[in-house]
Image (tube, rainbow over all chains, first blue to last red; front, side):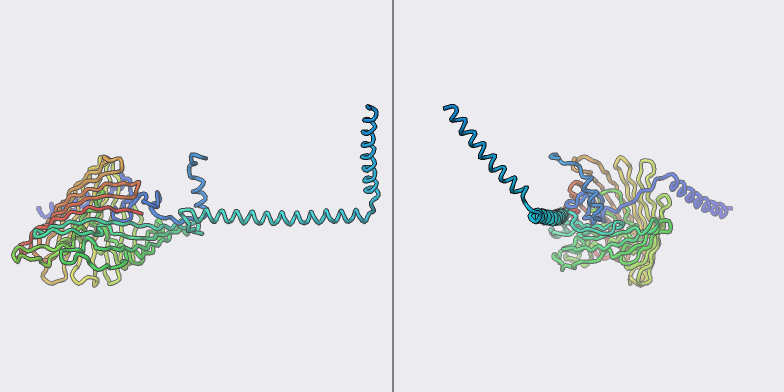
Length: 74
Length: 420
């Protein structure tokens, strides 16, 4: 009898774990984990907001230039 | 008198009329030959004007081209990529610190490269070949002078190891099919014992030996430095680390992902990660089983994992644990447990401040019967506008080893990491 109870108890634990994980995965919003010790997110001291020196195409470069906010003398 | 004056005026008018009549008669009297000559002259001049116009246009286009080149050369992005589907980035960081260590007998000060997150340089590129496939490459190397986990009381200035590889990696990300990686890079189990949302891992995390791993314990029995180092007694059993491998990562299912890799010497690992936001909590967790195969003569199978959670208030908790089998016959399994409690807030206008306290116990790592305890404090001030962090860490190490009487090692590290 005791062995049967332990058996059901183990099966129950497995089912609780499966249901718990499934419930968590369905009700949560995933986010991309980033290790702070790797390349840190955010701007760089010299590279600015890109956080690195991004090699862009000429077309992208021109688009970026046109998107720059006007300066005071403009 | 008046008549006389009028008479003079009439004489002048008459003279002008005479010469005008003479000129007109000359033109009207010109022959066809002269007219043809004049017409030819005009046509020649028109041709010359046309040629000059072309020259001016050519010069203007040359000036425009020079202006454009000059703008490109003065631009922060002087290197141009001709492929609009590709993205390439050069990045890197410098991480330097002052390390002060007291072994119970003597206190030493070192200028070090912080091994928690070493000085490095990288180039990452990716290209979307179509909507379903992205191909990427990553080359990253580190260059450490006086690594914080190597310097000790005997070797204060270790030889430079030069550039050391971190990533020489190539991947194919096929979206719903998954991601395949090939080359030198993180194995599936790499980082599974190091999930950490505290914001202080740059100065302290489950691999506690990164801060002052080279330090030697002073033995009170012999009144001399022993050969036992911090790194020899503390390990977070973080899978297979980086290696020459082929790796597969499954697509994410609501934050749940699986990964497996096979390394060059016949070892391999499998890992499961789950990262998600649940209500007001962020959760990052991972667990992995790994076997280094013939890549290690001492380590057999390992099972390790970690979980870290961050509440929106800034409070955070991190736990990690693992067990390791050894290949030497009769050796006890090694094990560790690590915990960290932290708080992140924006007290300073420069950026977020992160504080944490941690405790860990590492057993049977170096020798059977070892019990290595550690308590630490970490503080990191982030200054995102400058791509900089300033940090302070203190760590107490105590090693109980059979037949020895090691003094505790207290270490303090103050440094800064600058991302350029």
